[in-house]
Amino acid sequence: MNVLTTPIEGLLILEPRVFPDDRGYFFESFNARDFARQTGLQVDFVQDNESCSSYGVMRGLHYQRMPHAQAKLVRCVQGRVLDVAVDIRHGSPTFGQHVAVELSAENHRQFFISRGFAHGFAVLSEKAVFQYKCDNYYCPESEGGIDIRDASLGIDWGIPADRVLLSPKDLRHPLLADAPADFKWEDLI
Image (cartoon, rainbow, N blue to C red; front, side, top):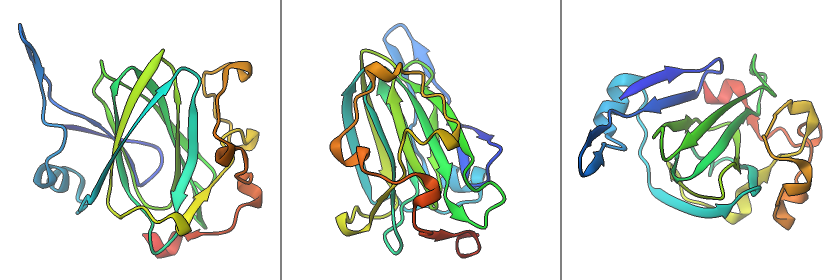
């Protein structure tokens, strides 16, 4: 596995070693021992999720409030998505900044997102199957979100406005400037 750092601490791009042959390919999508050795992080994933979405679907920007905050390891196993994490750790030198990475079935990349980030993605292909591992269980009472359309974040989602599909819940999230301070940087470092 190749671990790529990003400009924001707590966000990593993982590229697995893929072994292709005439039958297809094989790769190890996650190995806790190797992940800890290469990143210095100990993560105990307890829940796996999967979604299937069509072109133009945008999900996010979601997070779970403490004590149910989640670190995630995400990947796209069919199609392609633009995956984004926004730093919402108040006091962080990168507060409000984001990292965007294209994840696809072809590039096999994965994106590790620490606690203290809002996460979302946009489907760039006709259909996408998206999987993610979480290090804490989902808790509906701890749901939080930032408006995925917040222009102050400067995210180019790559989807024309007239093609965007959002859930009613995602339409109600506040802008980052109006969101509660659910994470303090000093509590997460």
